[in-house]
Length: 144
Image 1 (cartoon, one colour):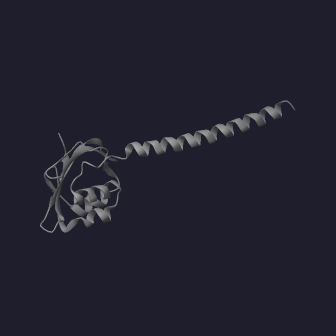
Image 2 (cartoon, helix red, strand yellow):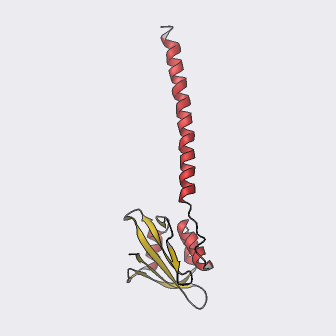
Image 3 (cartoon, helix red, strand yellow):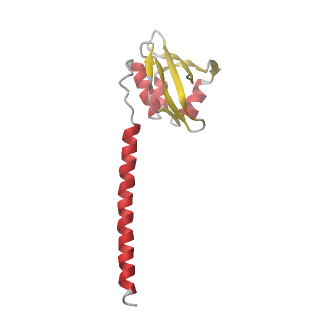
């Protein structure tokens, strides 16, 4: 019995130390993953688009909506959609994972996109700005 007890103690301490090491590794991996997922938004040259885009990426629907007129329109692959409902359902659950191109004076963004329900695909967001500098229309859809 005396020989068994120290071995169990050594085994328990070893497992405990291994678990601690794994925990630190997991934290390091998560930190690394977050750094990799942080995307370069320097391609976004339009200040208003960048502000809205950053809010979208951060799941901040209030800030995202502050860039739009109260009666902003949404078109999803050309079909009208309820703008407010879309923001409530999608903001914080859907995001760009990369930006491939920015066109139309910085108002059109195309890139890879992730949704919890549909997975990953290439999409576009096209922002239309009114005379007051607010967005009055957002066109979204699957890009080719």
